[in-house]
Amino acid sequence: MPYVVLARRGRPQLFSNVVGQEHVIKTLQNAILSNRIAHAYLFTGPRGVGKTTVARLFAKAINCKNRSDSEPCNVCNSCIEISSGRSIDIIEIDAASNRGIDEIRELRENVKFAPVSVEYKVYIIDEAHMLTPEAFNALLKTLEEPPHHVVFILATTEPHKIPMTILSRCQRFDFRMLTQSQIVKRLKELLALDEIQVDDESLSLIAENADGALRDAESMLDQVLSFSNGELNTDKVSEFLGLGSYRLLDNLMESIIKQDSVKSLETLNSLASYGADLPQCLKKLVTYFRDLLVYKNNPALIDASETKLNRLAEFSKSISTERLMKIVKLLIQTESDIKQLGYERLNFELALIKLARLKDDVIPLDKILVKLEDIESKIYSGIPEPTAEKPEIINKISTPIETFEEKNEIIEIDKQDPLKAKWIDILKSIKTKCPPALHAVLKEAYIVSIDDATITIDFDNKYKWHREQTSDPANLKILENALSEIMGKPMKFSIQSNNTSKSEEKDEIPTSQRDMRLDVLQDETVKMVLDIFNGRIVDVKK
Image 1: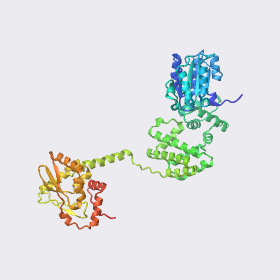
Image 2: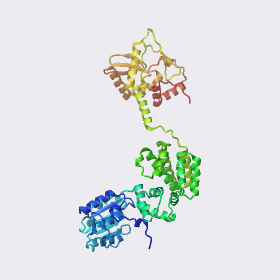
Image 3: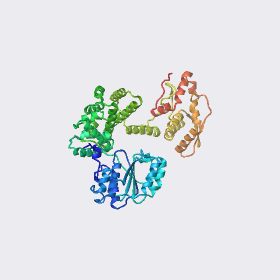
């Protein structure tokens, strides 16, 4: 008797045997029970998840003469003919090879004829997105108003390629990718048919590489059984999948986590000697570290064998989320480099060396944001003044203030001078109500006079740039608004005409060096730093 592959032998013959598509099965069963059979259905989803299988089951169920609830009996003539593919009333069309308008015209002609031996004539159009635009247009009218005895089922992996005029005439069902546990469970059931025992880890490896497609997993299982002569274990599966020895790959993952470049390179060399497919090994590493990253943040989202979950739990304790993200990003970049440039082993080795040198001293983003907020509050709110000491009976307090412009230059401030004291108070108050850079500019001014509506200020000649910035209408408006708010009434700044000051006459700094100082002081960043930290420029060198 000829051998029948597992994918065909294990094809579900009842709705209850279908794996992972409960949302679709329930809707179709309810439609059958309530006799609400639509004339057109669209089954969409990835390859190998059961679209065509469910289409055949549905065709069998609606035509079964001895149906039990919504399940076909599988013993009547109709069920037997449909299951064996001999029914002339169930027509399967491969749209990839019958995609033209002539084939659709022929279909339209045949639709008119009643079914021979069943209640419904069912057209299953596989890979429906491959039909030409002309073929879709020819199908429109028939799809909209077919004879009462006809049901269309369109199956496709690319629904976005089907015209909206077709989509709007169909009931759409989206099939889902299967989880690893669902695939493993189904593979166990298939192996039980041949009385083959196998460990979960081997089946999990197959399920991981199937990418959610049960048909792919069944085909791989069939091949592995032939490859291993019925002796199924993790090493045989790894070798078949091009991963070399499973233990070697696991050792490579461990050495990456421990940042052991020597062991990583030795393990890679062993994998290459074993004949492993290096790009496939790299892909496996990406998948593994992705699982580890997700497990560290939400273990419930990982669908894997118990052995792998225990391994993930062990590794997650010794590596940070930040380093895991770096590892995944670097491995993905290495995959891209190999695809574009080749040099599989060289790029793989470079990646392993880089991974061993990754730093794990990344400052978390939330801490950076807190630090920035703290700096920002200091900039705009000002640094609190120290608690005032008890007043002492002193005739005159001379406070030396080192300016930013002249090294060791000292200005005497007489705190008993009402005008100067008032200006100092104004500068302190205005600091919280204007940008720090603008306040730093205003600090270089000295007060000349004050009346009910105007404060007259002036700058030394060496502060020409400061004078210009303060005189700028936009800046002046900001300062006057702040001043008015402080004084509680409308106030203006008046800048006196430029005169040579005493400090200018005493300036003993060479002109070239003074110019350099002024250039530095005009830098906004420098001014802000000096203002925040109450600093001064000691020297300027080229």
